Image (tube, rainbow, N blue to C red; front, side, top):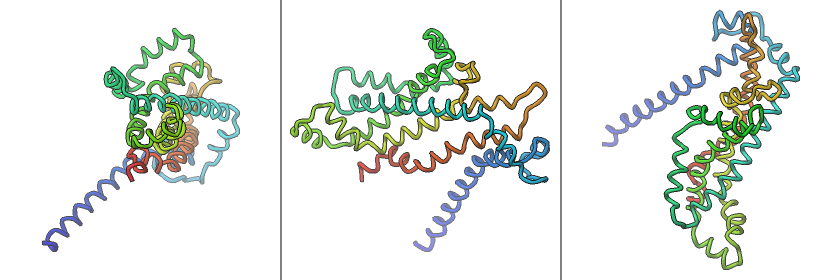
Length: 281
């Protein structure tokens, strides 16, 4: 029986690896096009998007961008939006999740279901009512007009992730903390929050990547080019008579590098945070 089933297992594993490789290549192919386009001239890119440089690597596509003050101003704007959004998401999601996970009160399930509905509606779908609300609050051309909607739409998913972690913490720890004189807030601060660091790292990583790459909301809210984040700075290469595609590709490469590096460094926290591995192990 072993000799018959072994080839089947080997073939199935081969198909699995083949499927993963094909999907990875399909997902990575746009990145290859961007990188190759960033080191060539616009003419070379337009003639063949995936070819190697014919006249040498055009590093000036990068140096021209990196020497512009507008680029570094956009970097500062992106950092401001990303860091503020991430801080506010953690600040709001952690106590909210602790309440849903550890406190029994009337109507908890109803409120949790209302919160969970937020997972079904992405920001793009609700952009019109969001824009009207931002305008009513006089937040047009304000960083807060971008930050607050990002926090709002990131809150449901972040809260759900943290609820799973908080519920996995044994009740004996809570009882012991109260015996030692801890208040409810003290239990949250000294026990729940430190033990949930993997989940907090996960939601922080997801929020950073999402806020760093945000484009549509910034386009709708921020009309002042001095407040544009990196995702909108790409429009400076679109002229009346054409687009500098080589510069665009270089700009996109510079845009995605920080997000990719941050994601790779925090990938293990995302896996642990979403699975609750440290608490269950």
